[in-house]
Image (cartoon, rainbow, N blue to C red):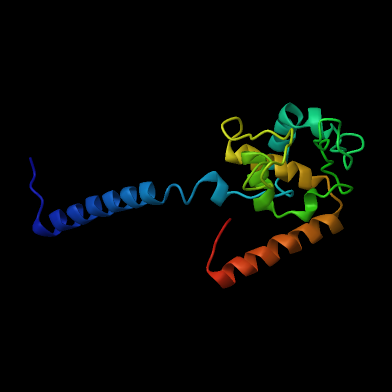
Length: 173
């Protein structure tokens, strides 16, 4: 068996130490680098949009419509006091929200802290049903159906929030 010279041994020890440090750092920062933080809704990413369409048709279209049109009279409360599912096309208000807000509403459902105490909604939480990547893909699919001027306006909302967060030293996406 060949022995390492002191130079090779030092290099080998340093290399092993660097791999261990990188592994520990990766595990430490894994929650920060989760789907929620790393991904975004990119309506130009054809693979993300294609996945989003499949997930939307499976989990969202029954309420929000195959063409993102929402339920009839979506601004008027039903007899149970709940609002019908809104449209996700340019007619609705989805594009008035940041991507981060839409992600959280989809993941956690329309309930506190995302809605006022006592607010009732048929919108379920998809946490545990959909992955973060699937939620981002659905949002990319929805955004891909908006006219370019609506996409641009919604991106301006996203950018304004990112600037505010940067000024405060907060990073949400």
